[in-house]
Every structure is written in C-alpha cells, then in structure tokens.
Image (cartoon, rainbow, N blue to C red; front, top):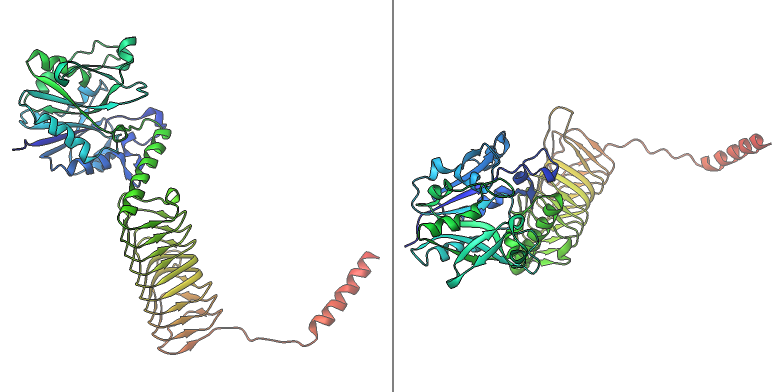
Length: 450
C-alpha cells in the first residue's frame, strides 16, 4: 500500500543573476512560469498537500501558485531553512514528503516516482536523494556511496576536497523524506559550512545517528536542469521545445523543420496536421486533424477545425475559430473572428470582431473597421457572401447571405440578402489628356533649364 504524499516546492529565490524585477520561478518557459510547471508535475502524483515556500514581498508568487498553500522563508538561510518553513502544515504528516525546486521546470513525473519507489522498498529507508552521473560534474554536490548502495554523505562542491571533487555521481537536488522524522531532523541541522547555511544535504548523517538509511535514485540530468541566468532560461526553453516537438511528431503531426517550430505548454494538435517552418504557437491553441499551417504563421488562443489551411505569414489572434476547410492566406490577420466551413480569406486582410458565414469569400485588402477609438463593434458576413478587394466594412454592419460588395467600396449600411452594394466615385475619362499634359510639362522644363 502506497503512503500518503506531500510536496514542498522551494520558490523563494529572487534570482539576482537574472537581473529582473520578476521573481526567478515566475519567468516563463514554453508559455508558463517555471514554478507552474513544477506544480503541474507534482499534481500528477495526487499529493495530499502541495506547499510552496516563497520569500518575503512575493505577492506575485502567492497569486501564481494559488490555490496551493504558501509559507514564507523569512531569512535566506539555505534549503534546510526553506523546508523547515513548511513545518506548520506538515509537522505531523506521516507519509512521504518530496522536496522540489521552483526553478527546475523540466522535472518529470517519472523521475519523482523513481524516488518514491526506492523509498518504499525498505521500512528502514528514511531519505532518498536524486543522483546524476555526469562526465563533467562542475559545481554540483558530490555523493559518497558506501556498502549496499547506501548514501553516506553529500559534499557541497565548495566544501569538497580534491578527491571528493573527482566523484562523478552528483546531487540532483530533489529528495524524498519520511514525514515522521523530517522536521525533527531539520531542527538538528547546523550551519557550519562555507556558506553559513542549513543544507538539506546534511540530513543523511543525522538519519544514520538514528539508525535510518539514505538511498539514491538515479535520474536523467536533463530533468534537473536549473535556471539561474537568462542563458540557463534559454537552454531550458530549448530542451522543453524539443520535448514538445518530439511528442507532436510521435502523435502523428508532421513538422517540416522541427527546430524552427515553437510550441506552448498547452498546444493541442491532432494527427495528420502539417506544420511548416518558422511557425509559432502562443498559448491556448487547439488544432484538429488534417490542418495545414504554412511557414511564418503565428497563432494564439484560437481553434482551427479539420481541413483548414493557415498561412503563410498569417496571424490568428485570440478568440478566433477557423471552420472546417476554411482558408486564411498570406498576410491575413484576424482577431475575435469566426470563419464558417469553406470560407476564404486569401490575402492582405484584417478581420476583427467578425462572423464570416460558410463559403463566403473575402477579397484582398478587405478591412473590418471595428473600433471607433472607444468601443469595438461587430461585422457579420453571411453564407456565400462575396466581398470585393480593397473594401472597408464599417461596423456595426451586416452583409447578408449571398450579398456582393463591389471592389474598393466603403460600406456603412447593411447589405440585404443577394444584393450588390458598391460605393465608388464616378469614373471620368479625358481623351488625349496625357498627350497635352506631356507637351505642356516638357515646355515648362525646357524653359526652366534655359
């Protein structure tokens, strides 16, 4: 029988190396805050509690992690000091407690489950630490293993001697602890180290004192990539994008140039969709099957139905829905607009706050004039309507089913069903005008030169 689980997420770091007024864990990766990713992963484990440790003056962090509980680490005194801040909620918790970090958004459910599996293998195991085997360990803490794969101690890099620095098994950061002992043992930590901080990595020696053992669970180093700088943030973004690209292709989506397609964490794409190069998805995009998204298109908070075609160089903005087999062509921008089945907006057009009926055709250069400087107004274009090129539709307006709008028109009144509306200045032709104009101007030019 599995034990109850609680998750403590450490998110109090301000991230001075980020050079930002935004708390470090609030910086976004694939469209979501780093701490948001960690919470999402934690919730997949169905924990009884999720506690987020934040710093003082972090109202933005508290709002981001709501409705989960937060506690404040009043003094920046290390990871041990951070976890003990959660004592008021978990002091009597008799299950397993997982400690996660708000700046490691790549952590996966599978990696956390490895720690829980090792923890549950023996009643005498009270601590499990994540471990990474690295060819170049850099500044990670080193893990000293004794008989029977028992973790004897973790040495922080700054406190390690030369022999210890040669160890390639490194501390991954996340850990699992038996909630019956954790907070009592945290109270026994001291800060006799080069940083003057309370380290979670000092707990194994305390567990040993009470006859309990500490184990390790080896996980993929990629899962524990942390962010301390903008360079780190870019690296993690790239890793996450590659994961999303791989998942899309595994689910039957064709990416013609995967490295140039950028997803958001919540992008949903059905099978047999084809995505061209240099396509970017903002948050909230849902794409049905057999859709084609051509190169250099940008989509956010929209739904694209089966068989539709988008782009190239198209922008689909929030609250838009593109119907089955509809088409949006090059240099078309739409916002808060629905296109019916088979409707076409092929090029050089802006549609805002618009409903376009099934099979309607919107000519090149059409603009819906939906804003008067204060309020937005709606344009309705009926089924089978035809809008001529270079037309301006001044909202609020209704172009009824089957109606035609002549090219170059500025339409300010409703157009009845199956009617033609055209507004155009009288076409004047002056015969031989050009010949006389050229003779007059040439004479003026010669006179000026002489």
